Image: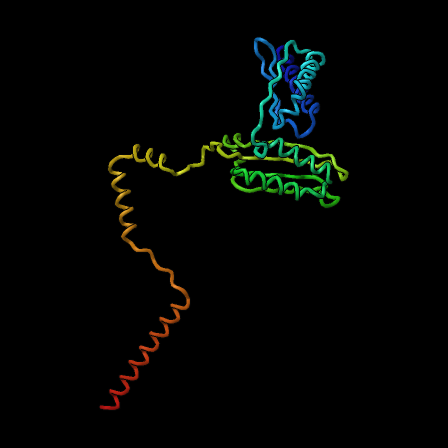
Length: 261
């Protein structure tokens, strides 16, 4: 019986999240989280357009709370809004934006919309991103197109750091699926090492005196050895010509000596 209750609670949560997204429209909301407190239910809506969701004097939030009480039978729902300052790093907002452009201007604009969003993400300073658009885009046969740049982790525990999302665009040619994965700047990746002053200080503090002396000796040897200069093809040819001229002069001198004898 407890298992059935657990499944029903999760179903209700899913229905509430989908209802909130449908109520405000595609491309306005990124995520909806539900937290249970002793006072009541707390619904956190993360969006980059808080004014649109709040409405004039909080009309839309008041309307949403009444619907949650009547339709979903919540006792005391409290709606909070979390503002997204950088929407170009949010995978759900990016996927919804591409879906909206395809619905407005047609499925043939998939390359322009994808490259436009990829450029925004890259200019923002993201470490990496990947966009996948699949459907009947250029022809009657369905295909999958990939647009990507930078570093992106796909497997292991480090892949959890990557923000992933999906969206669907209803076009005249058919349904187009969009998948987005973004690795935002400032995210700590476990297998990525940055060599800076702090890192070198930690290495030196943890190392023994003998190890430090060995590294100093290696550095001194490298400094003593002069780097090899790059020789161009012209210089090589000039040197060969000089050697040939010297050989010819030596042969001439030897011939003169023989004639004198």
